[in-house]
Length: 112
Image (cartoon, rainbow, N blue to C red; front, top):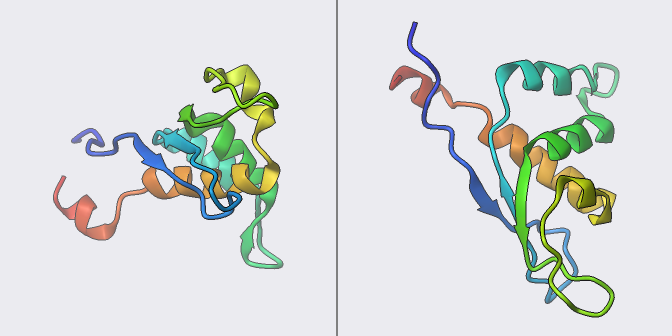
C-alpha cells in the first residue's frame, strides 16, 4: 500500500468575506478518518452537507490565518481557541475548502 501524499496546506480567501476584507485562512488537509466524521453530517434527504459538517471541517482543518483583526483593527494571532471569532457563513465556506483539499481527484489517485 502506498501512503497518501500530495495533500498540502494552502491559503484560501473566502468569497463570503465583506468587500475589502483581506483575511486569508490556511486550510490543511484532514485525515480520512476525519473526513468520515464530517460526512456523518451529510443530509441524504436534501442531498447536501449540513452546515454543522462544514463547520466541523473548518475546526479540524483551519490551521492559520492572516488579516483577521480585532475591533481596534489590530491583527489577531491565530489560535484554535479563537476560531469562534470567524462568522459561521465564512467558517462553513472555509470548511468546504478543507474538504476539497482533503480529497484526491481521480487523476491524482492514478498518479500515486
